[in-house]
Length: 230
Image (cartoon, rainbow, N blue to C red; front, side):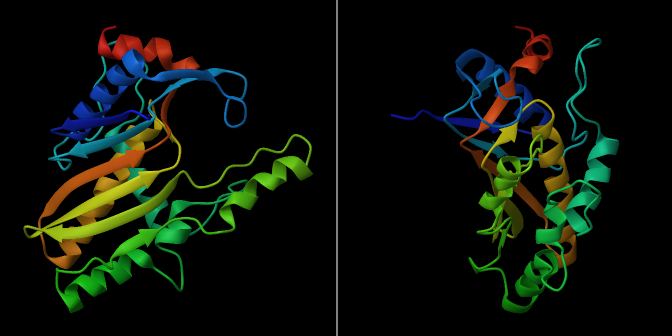
């Protein structure tokens, strides 16, 4: 039977520290047979649900002890928001989240805002998707071109709901780097949620994330242990 880990945190930094500590202590350790850092080890939750009650609290990025590599910063998180809101891809990028969330002619972010303002708050239709049925085929590049590296979207769903008058996000990651990806991704999504809540005219709410692949790579274990005092 798979273990389901539930992490409840007040803010985003606390969520990161709690996840890192729990994964170091109880995460499943295995060798990566295919994927990023193939042949090395990682620790991973079977399935995790992370509920953040007050994700708008600042700072968004965790503050680490002196000498421990910082996974992100509030400045970088603010820059990451642009990645979520613009569809352009840089050279060498196979995808961006922005091309799915905010691309033209299908800008899901603005459509969700429009629907809530036009339909009212009691609807379950405002779910934004990332990737498509073609995403799995991005990996074929590695099979067809020697030395090529490919990946598909890690973030797959940004679902929304307005409950008790506030806008909440429910997000799913198929695979998720805990050390640096987690705080940047959630920080950027939180800024996106704040933008959408302001545009709709409602308060900002909770951020709930889940994944069957939240992991710590072997090369980050030492820094992770230092960060949480293990």
